[in-house]
View 1 (cartoon, rainbow, N blue to C red):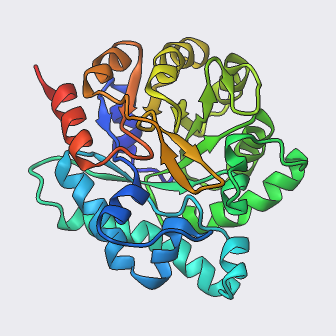
View 2 (tube, rainbow, N blue to C red):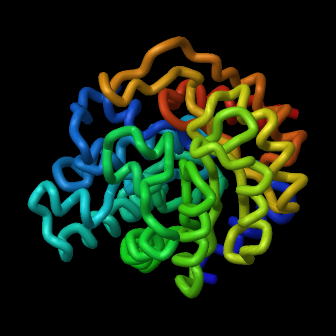
Length: 305
């Protein structure tokens, strides 16, 4: 495994690590316009220093793990913007280097910092909200062919782990697990869920069980769901897989894909994270609309005596 042994060992030893929060909202807060199909991945080409600064804000807020800006970065998505395959590969690798640079710059004392390379679902490339529905009309083999090339590039860039994240369906999870084999890097697998089902409507227990048999997967859980949905999912993931659990819900607001805007109010509270830890969570953070201030509160809650 190319993964930093300390990360897998820390999880196996029961250490609780703090993940970062939403990349897009941090970039938007810094004044960057993300209203196109590439979302935060656009800044890998136009302003990578802004991506590094966003990672740095989370590290200095208390995060132990940065998730790269490659969620929506794909060869196909870059091609639609006139970016060729070689340059697209360079930008995917750059997403890992931006996070590494932030880790080197972070003013933290005697605390190891890790990088998770984000691998978003096929629907993220479509940029039409379908990552919250799944069922793209593609076979497992077709989804594997889509994911494998960028996973190869990201793995070669040397992250500590791949974050197979916001996965809406078991078909896509199966494709990702197939693509993961032989890459020489560990991964976590996290589903996007609604209640006790994946976003595509499959029972979450069934979905989680897929990862139980994959030795490359060092943590399993959920992300980009509501904080309330996260609570049930953590306990279920721990019971079904026997692996450390990863959980990073969004703020509780709702994404309107048509309007490309968030609606509702935040329900994420740092007070919830101790319950997730007690249920088996070992990687805990936030997703969309969860910023450095909230991550600082999460870190404080988890590190308090």
